[in-house]
Length: 258
Picture 1 (spheres, rainbow, N blue to C red):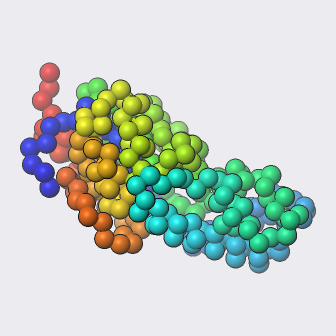
Picture 2: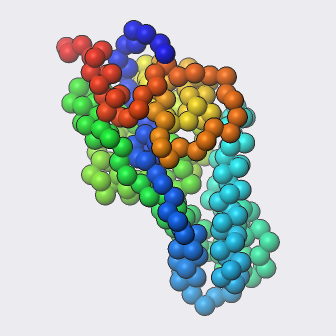
Picture 3: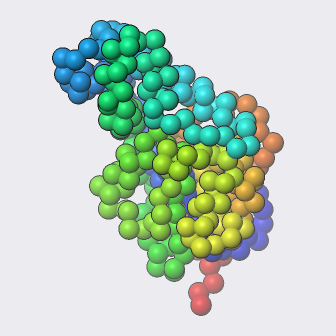
């Protein structure tokens, strides 16, 4: 850990693992399957069992792809159309593919909102309120299958007003650890990347991204819901903290009121 850090000019936050903890509910695949069948009605689609199997396999394949995409320096995002048409429906009959192609955005929203049970992390609202109080701008820079799910969640929790910007990979076409993503986040705060801290829960995506981008400080905040690291990554965080409340306490220690 680095010592004698100065308070940053701005804060860039990951969503999952930092703002929220996430857990996968048992049977989420079945819930999505039934919702998709209701969505498309009686139109031509694959049988329920096949749909369930392909939704399940698609999620596994996408997870493996995301792990692999932590290796390239400038990974591109897996867009929603590719996720649905290549990871779920690649081998469906043409008529079924044509049907599901009309519901790509709805299916991605369904999957993203259903397969994660989200709860706010301890101290996150207090951290955001304190940053707002002292005039320290905050933005979200986060990988996401469907950033709109995250936007809606923050709006429901009454937290949207704390953020200068919310940048999600599916909307920006960039994904961490592509350093351009964090540079874009710093630009939304009108700051140099060296004047920002980045807070994330993964060494292989978040800390690596911050290191590549030249972030002022990398804060690693492991979450109970974080995926296991798939391989060794030759980077280290400047701070390792347990919760947003711990981050708030650290920032308060180094804050010098003007």
